[in-house]
Amino acid sequence: MKHSLKILATIILLIIFNSKSHAQYRSFILGIKAAPTISWMATNQNTYNSEGVKIGFDWGVAAEFYFTKNYALVTGLNFIYQGGKLSYDEEISSSLVRLDRDYRIRYLEIPAILKLKTNEIGDIRYFGQIGLGLGIRTSSLARDSYDLSGRSIMVDYYTIDGQTRLFRTSMIVGAGIEYPFDNNTALILGVNFNNGFSNVLKGKNNVNFLEHRAIPNFVELNIGIMF
Image 1 (tube, rainbow, N blue to C red):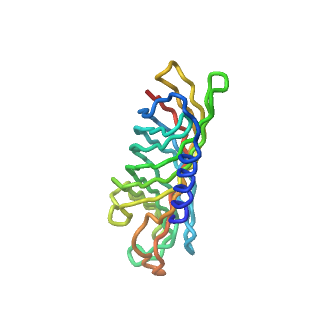
Image 2: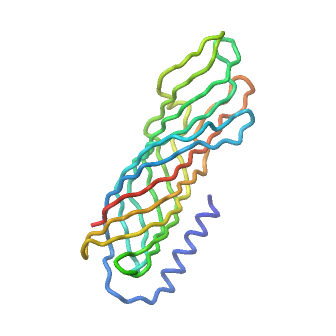
Image 3: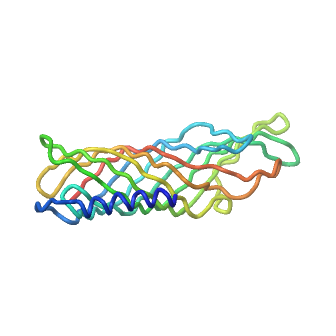
């Protein structure tokens, strides 16, 4: 993560000191966004398997601070509803079972993103962006299912805040288009990949004493309005 921060900071400084644009531009733009997501939890822990994706949703507000016409630093607040599925060996009622766990985790994320836009091509401006995200967990739930003594058991969603970490860090990479309605308002359509850096689980497995490990990732389709 430190290496990524240094690269991002270097890019920002190069753009600032090498920009020769003197065109008029708005230095601050505020907007809102909503995005359906596809999320999953990756794991490289022995005996742990990732078991597919979940459909989620996020929404938030974005603030863009322009230091030239085409380059901006973007931050804001994103409310993220994501999760994933894992399976692993666990001991329940003195029996070894294969536990399937479905996670629902909510985060309040604060991004720091460098956004680079083209000039108008027709009526559209294209952009790419790269940056970092810091997520603060607001709630975490799990639903468990397993077979015990020939019976299928399911435990509906319950709180597992004590088994998840408070913070999540990630790299955000994306691209999209801006379609202006007028001089002050634009429609934003884009796709972001939010690639997690950090393990979001805590504790150890009570069968093999391995650390619980999972890194959540998601892809989102952004729809927004900038004012």
